[in-house]
Image (cartoon, rainbow, N blue to C red; front, top):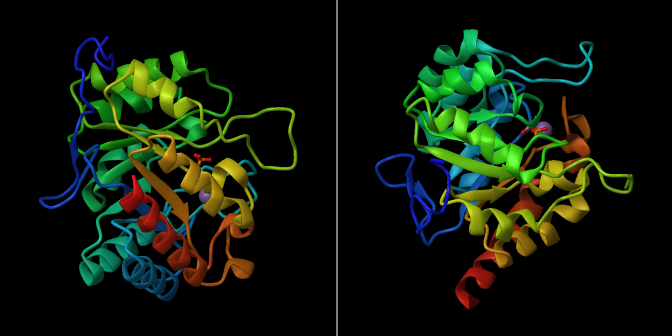
Amino acid sequence: KLASKEVKKETSIIPITDTLSIGGKEIVVMAGPCSVESEEQIISSALAVKEAGAHVLRGGAFKPRTSPYSFQGLEEEGLKLLAKARDLTGLPIVTEVVNPETADLVAEYSDILQIGARNAQNFALLKKVGQLSRPVLLKRGMSMTIQEFLMSAEYILSEGNQKVILCERGIRTFETATRNTLDLSAIPVLKEKTHLPVIVDPSHGTGHYQYVAPMAYAAVASGADGLIIEVHPDPERASSDGPQSLKPKKFARMMAQLKLFAEAA
Ligand code: PEP
Ligand code: MN
């Protein structure tokens, strides 16, 4: 299998821009709001996460919501606002693609295509992004085994796109104190099985902002190649995922602490 460690021993280094790649020595941090809500919101988020040392700006324009009555995203308008934030800050963009029909449009505006947990076994979508040239951030489905996760990656790789980054974002268990159960053991398990880089999403993994920083540190200590973190200038008023979003100041504190851990390692 293409993702297998038997094919390649060292972690694959996935180029994002001329100056940024994932899978090398540096821990790559992607940060920003769950959803793009307005120009002011995404620009202020972008400036804040850049100032704190993030490498990539996240923000959903197409949102795969559990309820059809919840905010569905600004769609193409949201992509344009992300591009504006990139022009202003130089931060590359990661944003979600929810179906094959809009994949080319999302690829035009973004630097990394995110496949969400709810689409992790949408094989038509996986094949479609496998035919594009953009790097793909593939999230683990909420009830997916590691083996199934790796098979989803194969759907992308086997279409020709080798730029796949895996993301552990928590799985569904009986526990309700957290939104999901962040499976940190997935990091060393994946590291044993695949050469693809592995990043961790402690925001969706826990669902509560208080638990995000400790799980971020634990992920890095466990061998993760990067993190994706939700940051919002005003979480109380966020259109989605406010309770798990860090305010810029807390995010900056987390980044400073993370740097100390990286230096110690
Ligand atoms: C998100 O990143 O906002 C998101 C919807 O994540 P997931 O697909 O992991 O639930
Ligand atoms: Mn979210």
